[in-house]
Length: 114
Length: 111
Image 1 (cartoon, each protein chain N blue to C red):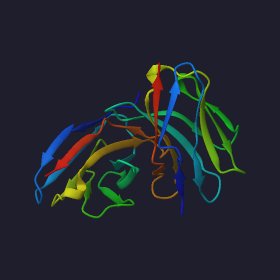
Image 2: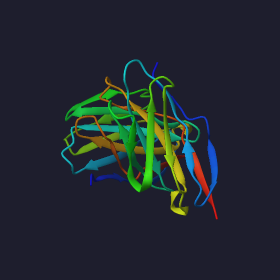
Image 3: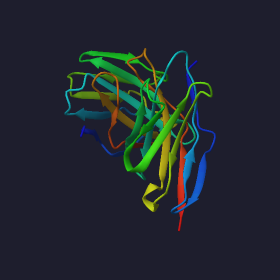
Image 4: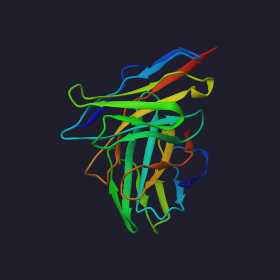
């Protein structure tokens, strides 16, 4: 069955430091992958998406992610974290069937320290 | 920018009562979805629709009904609300089933 695993429930990073959030997926075939961000008491906003092609995709606000088929991973990175990046980050895979619904990971909460 | 609105934004319901959550999108998107969010579970799909007057079951449809009377509107109905349905509910829409645009969510507390 398709699934997404985000092994880190919470990550604390200093402002200005780099950030990497891990995502592993289980999917038969080539997946469409997404990273969404949820700011406090808000809905989810798209950060970036991967379609088959260049394995490194650029997103908004300096985020990028790298797809690896051999590792079944889609890790998110940012070179320098800002306090406004304090949020919950969700990795998701799109299903070809079922109306292309998303299967989400459990999310990683990023806390930014001064 | 896609616009998806939800109402109410929060609601307190009694066990056994009927609850209707509404979602409205102004993007001419064919696909609409209802997810629920629980701590530690991420978002899980309840129902979805790809055309008006038709709905499909998602991964956790038990205890929920959905209604899509028009392209713009998609409702989630809890006929007999239960404590276990306390959660945050998100509606989303997309055009080709590609990128999904989410509403702000509805916080439902069932007492």
